[in-house]
Length: 298
Image (cartoon, rainbow, N blue to C red; front, side, top):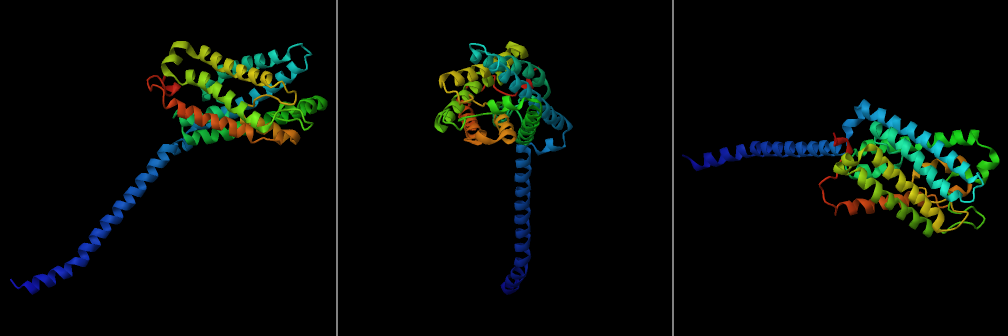
């Protein structure tokens, strides 16, 4: 066989072979790209966007947050206006009772978050998807705004001014209060306390099943009341309203009342979210058995 003919034949075939190889490479790249895109969408829970259950749960979060903050704010202000010798005892007690009943009602419906902090840690722990977490937080913020719109409309103006609409206050503008650093440390510490005690129990499948819904809600609500009590007693400053524990609550009151509530408002977001990150890192060191989605409990 003439080697020149073979050589010429091979040269004529090489462009076609290269085009085939390029085609396979492009196909593989496209397939990889689509796979990564699909994997990312699955990871954030994009499929839930078309789930009616997710939207119903989101609406539940909006209504529940609005009702919770309306009831909680009115009750706290009423406790402070009661002229009792120890109103600081009444405030955490009110927080415990109200939070307990709302948790008991809403946990079976939407998970009973009513707070961006609980939603964030639930997303980090894989209890809910990140897409659902985004809509939950938006709903909670809208619910907060609605509740404070109602409070501002029905509350006596002098009382609303005296207690800054029951919002999250670090300093009253007259020199009474705490420093930003102190407020940040308290937000971080008290939020971590709630997560460490309450959320650890709630996310433990075995313990949740052993204790039951009522007891888990009581533990979580009790921890919130304890955190509030610690924050309002440890400083002894009249201009400090205690820990927020709920950034949505602080946002709604600040938008509707303004003034001193905007001073250091970022503390009520940064402190709790730092606590979320710290708690999530801590959970990575815990035994995996028992930890998981409470929805998986029969």
